[in-house]
Image 1 (cartoon, rainbow, N blue to C red):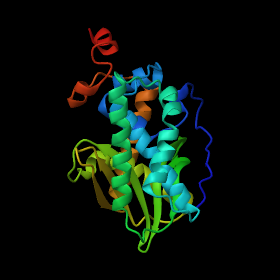
Image 2: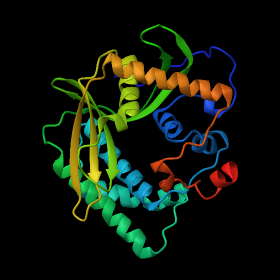
Image 3: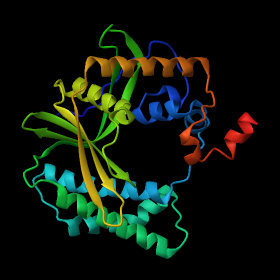
Image 4: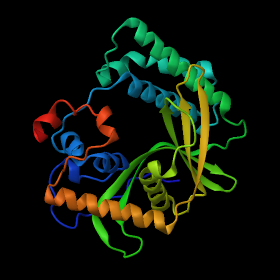
Length: 278
């Protein structure tokens, strides 16, 4: 599968980094709270990397190494992957500006990462096919599949894994989470529909399905694979409906405060948000 980037010409002049592309993460942030989106993507206020996010990032790096070697027909075992993650640990800490409260906390995080990835590798079927794509940056013009309208901006996403299963290509995304259980499909709909749109535009085939592969940070790490059907017309209609509202908000500069459950985990709650809304 070609992962060459596809570019598009803007329909009209747009300025600022927020107009450079649409992505699932930007859409998700805007849907949760437009004001938080403004702080992050318009004002450039970065949130600190938490230990939980750092563990997730390191797990992703280990799985990327495993699957990139698998693409080449090279099998890495859990010890090989663990060594690569630990060797790159300090560099990633520096890049992320990560600060652990104590050396003990950092050691616990290292052990958690190694255990989670080892549990994942033990869970993967031995006959899993070689990947078509690993940590692939995909970008394509946003062209409404129902009207043919070019929205004048591209969609960009980083897809963790695409496997050429017997029934056809399957797009998989890795999640590290504190709890297990089947995640509600709708909570991941924007991301999954975005990845399916990108894959179809770049590969020309329809995906056979999509997966959320969860690495669960329990005392004894657990792994769960959750499969979802290929995207339907309804999924893409909803995706493009959200994207049009998002672009309208950017055009108008409307970034309203949207209180909800996400406020409890928002780094802006007691700082920028309070000053903006106070």
